[in-house]
Structures are given as C-alpha cells and as structure tokens.
Amino acid sequence: MQYTIFSWNVNGLRAILKKGSLQGAISRFQPDILCLQETKAKKGQAEVDLSEYEEIWNSAERPGYSGTAIFTKIKPLSSFIGFSDEINQSYLWDDDAYGNPLSEGRILTVEYPEFFLVTVYTPNSKQDLSRLGLREQLWDPAFLKYLKNLERSKPVVVCGDFNAAHTEIDLARPRDNEHNAGYTKEERQGIANLIDADFMDTFRTLHPNEQKYTWWTWRARARERNIGWRIDYFFISKSLEKYLMSAEIYDDITGSDHCPISICLDFGKD
Image (cartoon, rainbow, N blue to C red; front, top):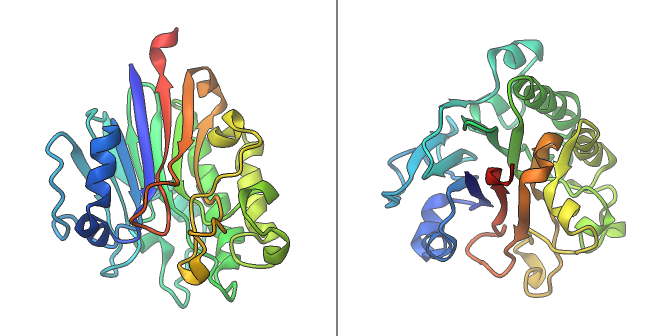
C-alpha cells in the first residue's frame, strides 16, 4: 500500500477555492490524502467538489478562524478531533485574549491500518509574543504527549503548520529574527523536542542541505524575493523511516501565503 499525503495551510478555504489554486494542485498531483490547515470555514460553508474524497473537518467555534480538515481517498479506520480527554484534563487550558486553543479546531486525527495521521495548526505566538507562554508551557508539551500516546498503538505521521522555523537553514534571515515570533528559542525547542522524541523531520532527512521555504509574509514582496520561512512540516515515527520515499516542498504553487508540502510512504517495500 502506498500513501501520497499532502499538507497545505490554505489561509482560508473559500478564498483559495475561488482562486482555483486548490483544484489545480489536486488535479496536478492527485494525492491520496490532503490535510488542510487554517480552513476558516465550517463544513458546508465552502463549495468543495471532490467526489473521490471523504471529508473530515474540525472547525473552530469562532466563525472564519483557524480550523483543520482532511480529504482522503482511502477510507480511514477511525477519526477524532482535538486532543484526547486525557490530554485535555492533564493541562490547565484557560482562555487568553484570543480564546481557548481547544475550541479553535487545531487538531484532527485519522487512523489507517499502518499509522495514525495527525494534522495540526499550531497556535501562533503573535507578534508581541503574547501567546509564547501558551506554546511553551501548554501546547507544545501537550501535543508531544498526545503523539507519544498514539504511538503506543501504532506509528504516527504528523503534518501541518507548526508556526516555527527549527534551525538557521529554515529561514532566510535567522539573525534578524532571533527574538521574533516563529524563531524564538522556546519555539525552536518545541521542534527539537519532537525530534528528540524520535519523530523524523522528513524533508530535512531527505534534503539535509536544501534551503526551501513554505511561508512568506505578504509584505515587501517577500515571496517574489524568496525571503521565507520553513514552518510547515511532515514528521514521522522513526519506525516509518524505511517506508519514506519522498518529502517535497512545492514553492511554485501559489494561492496562499503558505505552499503545499508532501510525503510518499510505500508499505509495499517489505
């Protein structure tokens, strides 16, 4: 069995459908599974005509905000939204100035015979770093614990917008951004903790020296000048390494301030 999985922060599903960008990418690549972040819509609000795909949604309670979705040609064994009850009850999830991250549709999990697939839209630390404490003290440790709990049953594939660049090679101007949201030591440590827990950064594993980005600010012609950040990732359990065939970044595909990324897993190799 082979799985081609795409992930894309679309920054508004209705907007990207109107541009035709999502339809074009699906037509070009025909992914088996498509994971979306920042959908900013509830099921039925966006006219998605993908008859080959089963739709699974986790939308934010707040209209027009956040949200994740998975479109899959391969029928999953199960699916569930958000963290597990254990994780929800293990941490103190108070509302902040932006709301409660548990109500923002940020995590969606589907189960296939060989692995769990998790897509995530990690909370942004905000320009003034007002959500950095949430990231460091709650979200990142809770998310890692959630993944490791899943891994007790079977391997895990996790993809999405992690809102952090891990190392200097993952952004165009690391020195200028050392204390800025997306490249603070706390956010980078969150990525390091995933890797230390034996989750492989698939793109960096297969392309150790390649400098490609997945997000560009709308300001100052950043995308045209390729002043970007790699903040969208596929991580996989170490046990899946032998099945990993490819990990790609499609920086030529426009329509969002992020570009899509993909991996291919081939379980027919055994």
